[in-house]
Length: 302
Image (cartoon, rainbow, N blue to C red; front, side):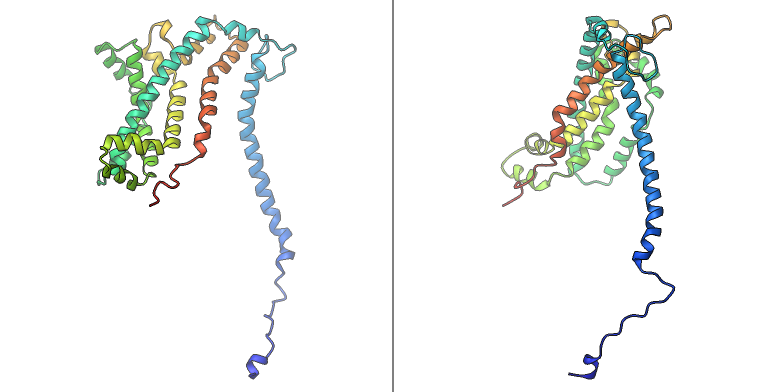
C-alpha cells in the first residue's frame, strides 16, 4: 500500500464565521413562513370574494324579506321559488335558452372541428399568422360590432329570429373554439390517420371515426366553454330578439329590476339558482371525461 493511499483524509476546514445549515434554518424559515402566510391570506380574501355572493344567493332565496345583506333568514321558506316557478317567468325562458345555446354550441363545435383539421394536419407558413388573426378576433368587444350587425340582420330579415341569433352566437364563439380544437387535435398521432387511409378511408371518415373519437376530452372542453359563454350572454339576445316569448333566461332575468324601481331580491336569488342549474348539471354529467386525457393506449402498437 502506498503512502498516499494510507494517508487519512483531511476534513475540509470550516471558517469560524460560517454556521451550519441547522443553525441558520430558523432564520431562513421565518421569511418563507411570512411569505407563505401572506399568500394564504390573499387566497382566503379571494375565496371570500367568491363565497360571500354565493352565500347571499342561497340565503336570500329562502328569505321572504331578503335584502342585499348576507344574513340568515328568520324563517326559511320556499315562497320565492314558488313565485318564479311559472311558465312565463322560468319555463319558457329556460327552454328558449336551451334551444338557443344548445343549437349554437353544436354548430360551433362542428365548424371548429372542420376548421381545425387542416390547420392541424397541413403544414404551411400561413397557419400561425392565421391562428394569430383568429385569436385577435376574440379580443374584439361584442358591443363594437353590434350596431352594424343589427343593421345587417334587418336588411336580410333575420332580426327577431332564433335561427339568426343562433348563427351570430356560433360565429362570435367560433374563433376561440377553433384555437382550442386545433391544440387538442395536435395531440392525436398522424400515424392513426395514415393507417385509416391505408384501409381506404377518406379524410372525412378519418376525421369522424378516428380523430374525433380520440378527442373526447378536447371536444368536451370546447362544448362546455362555448355553452357557458353563450348561456350567460345577455347583450346579443337582447339586441337581436324582440318578441317577449322568444327571450332567453339571460334576458328575462332583467325583468326583476324593472318593477317600479324596486327589486324583489328573494325571487331574483331563486331565479338565479334555477338559471345556473343547467350549466352545473352539464359540467357534472361530463366532468369525468375531462380528466381522462386522450385514450391512445395501445392504439399505436404494432
